[in-house]
Length: 251
Image 1 (cartoon, rainbow, N blue to C red):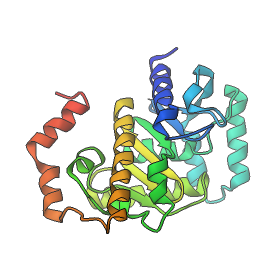
Image 2: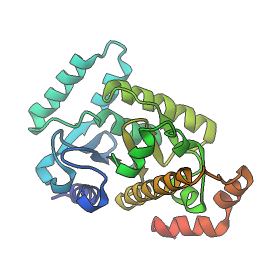
Image 3: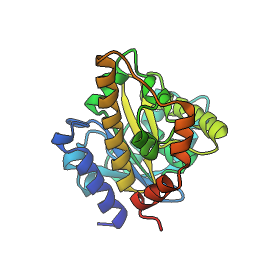
């Protein structure tokens, strides 16, 4: 088993652990950028918790870009492209492969994890969904998730979602000068964008904790967010930069 495949398998098993309550059955997917023009992504219908080497598909990133860029692409064209990949690899890639490609090509993510955590989806399926991306309630949220996550209202999974995520990622990077760590999808779930499998797991864990904290705050009268100055102070503190580097294994 290649090192990329082994890493992706271990991450998938962690995200698929029943006690984490992030996914059940064949929900969710993971990917890793294997080279400049290729990624490995979970196959459609495979379970993260039990995924093995044969449950990941080698997908050409160029093929994903062609689907996204061609205004004439429809669901039938996507199906045909995915069937062509399946004819080579033996498995059909996840319907969210195009979103994974966008996260890698537009946001520079090396590893991507898509899950449906119950505490997070509790908010994403409520009228407070956008709060996850617009309100900061405690310091660790900034350290791990950044100050400005991306929120995408519910969009049909697959081609439409990939195009909308790409549009919002480009807007975010233009406005903030850097890509986000997490994308919240209304009525759907999250995409964690990392430089490593460990970072994807940290982002996912923090999103779950933040969601629980927000739900608790809403239940006892409402949230008391940090003000903008406090956010900037935390984001710019030298000790927090040091801690981020330590978490990511950087000197």
